[in-house]
Length: 125
Picture 1: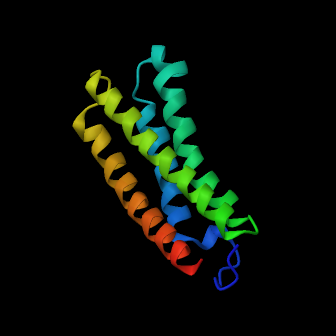
Picture 2: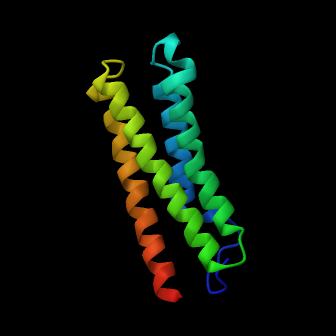
């Protein structure tokens, strides 16, 4: 973890907390998917959602800034994957615009936060 950050834990990171909110929301919305998607979209949505805060936390625990940046990049990729799965569910008619809008809004917020964090860490190199 970069030394000039005064946080005691990744749990204090606002981006991690918002990503955790996204996991909860993703689980709630994915419950609306049909039962035959349990091992398809539901599984993919939940795996991608969990990957976002998990990679933020794992990167925080790494000793080198480059490792941290790599994990933040993975979290960002998982975020884009999550958005795509929800858009697929919408296009297939499994979820409505009303269902996916809050997820996409929160995902955009988390994405902006991750982007900002990545830029700040890259500048500190």
